[in-house]
Length: 523
Image (tube, rainbow, N blue to C red; front, side):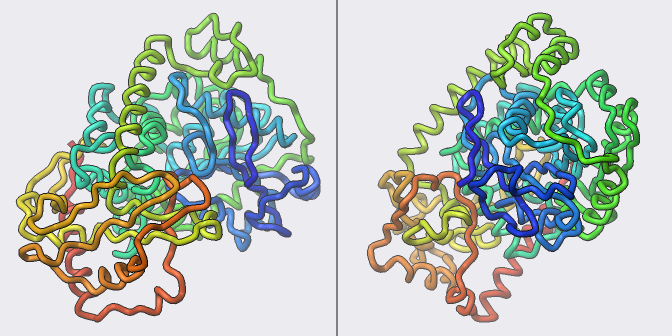
């Protein structure tokens, strides 16, 4: 697995995507893999896609792939990158990580592609601190420059995401997040799969990683007017018209803030959500490819060492931290924009997150979080299949009083009318699994209780349950289970077709929920 060992103990995952080898790790030097007759595009990989080539613009068939060398990086708390959560972390720290990666791979100044709001914030921070390494900047699904919530409001995520009182609290929060990213552009099965993907990555066993992602997304990250005014490169902004994660009105705010850019090209993609780089990939790929080709350097630049001292000077000037220029330039934490008081607050939060992780490590894995990463399939002795999915979450417990309860979702402070699932242990005659699960060995949760009053006997449950009759324990040869992503069913599983009546019932259930979700109104 290609990991770069960077200062501060960060092991950053990267992939070199070339015509000869798409998403195949290379053990040779990067310079020997890159085509010297092509420009280089550096891409950041957002947390909500399994791997780089799931981004259509980076796929081997993409025109961008045909014209560029592509190097894809996963920032901290994303994908396979391994790092310790630290109080000073912010987009500028992740930007310093990327600069160290440029140095390690001897990459030349490159065009930078940052899809998704979190990667966008990191990409902007990188361009601000290391302007000589970026020749053009492309952002898709941009964030607002200001915080989405207050610090006090952010802390309410403890009870819905980092340390939920009930499984359904996390299920509902992730469902709302999923809808804000995709709107109604996913099928029932795709929506189920995406929530299971988030459950595998953003569950309480990984509270510190989730906290880092949420903090960058929800709180202010010092993308000040002065910082943005210093960007001189040409900038492309693409944003979905239906983006419910960040309203399309932010496009005008960014255009007004980028006063020093060589050019600012902005397009709002019609009828598209935050994840428009996937749902409207043809339009996004066209705009991106056209932008990159129009802003190629006159000659392909050679490797330029990152100007770390100049970056510290920028931190000192932009964030009112005179002592920043005296910090260690070989430590990514030195580039943080956070004040000492903010760092202390994050330190306290991280201590609490680590406590949550320890406590949840002794509990059964939350429903729906079973699985392995796509790149771990060959290493897994057996692949656990999620027995819980969003569209059928209340089938087993239709009489639960929580099903019709109006709930307040703190994830983005909106009021959502949803249906929620009752815990198995609260249902008479059910048999909840109580043995703690380890990282390397996971027990598939018991089937939905068919003996409960009003329970639904689903054909799909009996099919999946038959996989575990030989003992139920699904071993792993590696220990990365807590970061797992969804694995698609193999061909044999795909051939098991459920009766039409079951499909119809599940479809009706998800339509009911979709109707409820579409009534979301910003507070």
